[in-house]
Length: 322
Image 1: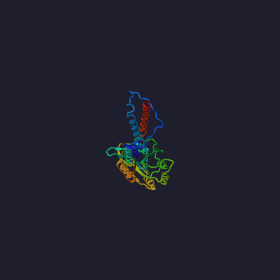
Image 2 (image 1 turned 90 degrees about the horizontal axis):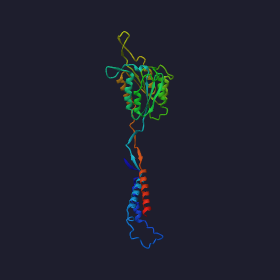
Image 3 (image 1 turned 180 degrees about the horizontal axis):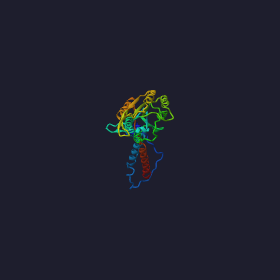
Image 4 (image 1 turned 30 degrees about the vertical axis):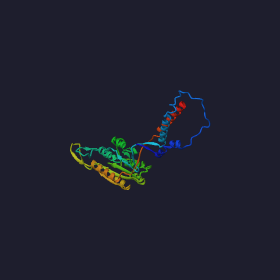
């Protein structure tokens, strides 16, 4: 859309006519007198309207440049406030256990359920900064806090087991995620910790990492993932019931969350996991305060260039024809 920053400049449009109409005519100091003029002198040149047309066009282009024309693009809405949300995900070997019902008769792995639900959660966080920390043998910052939600979705979909080992370093995952909040100025700092086991390795104790998160004003919501019962086949081909989540440390995950003012959730299947992330989405609502701005391109160089070209043409015309 075309707009002008200084539209009142248009009031200067009749200025040349006013000057020509009311200004006092300058009298020449000397007069050149010729005995006679040639009979065949062509007066059409002196009666030409070309100088007038060039002058008027140059004046119009000059006023257009002074009015500062700009081209405004489509309005873009930018959230004025955002939340910083770190997703801290267990990538230990037990995430390969196929004990999660995926809506049908066939069970899917914890890893597949986590990726599917997490991508859907991320898509609903438009306007927030999200990051991803993985932990197994060690904690690892996979994706720093970013507003690029689409890229984070792709990063989650490409996750594979074995990237950072097969054990469970919950403390390191929480500590590394907390470290990313140090320079954050977001009004809300949220960490969503997902694990299917207990802390078995790592240089940082989980509760010490939780204390650090609390001191950094980070709220942790923890999720315990895994079914409580599944049928497995023994060496004789017989089916028997077992608890695949026997090593899930719910007490630890609960203490970590409550210490920081958050909550612990239990997800035994994909539907419960989806419900948990929906609950967290409601607890940490997306800010709806937005600021709108429009991209703009200055166009004044174009009419200014046209003005210069017309002035040069006018000068050449008068130099040639007088």
